[in-house]
Amino acid sequence: MKKIMKSAIVATTVLAVHGAVMASVVISGTRVVFPSNEKEVTIRLSNEGQQPGLVQVWLDEGDVQAAPEQIKVPFVLTPPMFRIEPGKGQTIRMLYNQSPLPQDRESVYWLNMLEVPPKPEDGDANYIQMAFRTRIKVFFRPKALNLQEKVQEAAGQLKWSLARTADGKSYALEVSNPTPYHVSFMHLGVDAPNGKNAVNEDGGMVEPGKSASFALQGGESLPAGPVKVKYTWLNDYGAGVEGEAQAVK
Image (cartoon, rainbow, N blue to C red):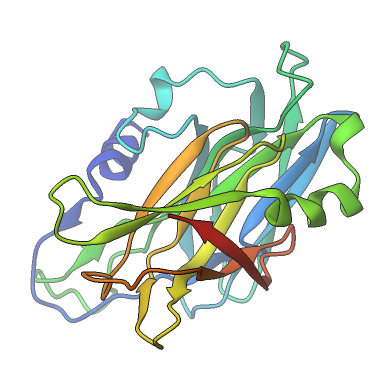
């Protein structure tokens, strides 16, 4: 178990030359929403490959380097480690231990899944064994905030501004989030009046009551006048939703 945990922390590749190995175990969904009035939620995993996989799951608070055995979160995952046969699935239960969490805003955690494929059966001493790690967000949502109409409105309440980056060479979009929800973006950018656009294809997230900055590629110079922000945010089902707003300069 310790060896697997260590592999997760450093995304270990055990060297060799037997050919590429691809991850086969997948999580159903790209995010988890945990309503505070629920005792537990379930997460479905499936093995879409042709070989069995050994899987370990754990939660963290955002530090990708944190060792699983040292992390303290208000949830329990069961089972924490298991084997999935090819073509089969596994249901994970996430249980809330009732530790106090903010009730005026969402809290975010990260679900980690580490898959270690089996060794090849051909007896070749030289092979590649890779530990594939997947991380998705887990949003703990207070009962009073678990209203879809409010969730859907959050992105439209964001406040946008355009400012020079610290080096003064380009622009960045700065967004302020006055809502109690996390808003995640697939990508975002600006349409300038002269048709010169600048984009950020990396995306990211802005937390409740906080601000975030997104550097723009192609935004070295933007003309005076109004600038329209175009963005794609992710809903509870992981689907992209288009949005527009005006940026303050």
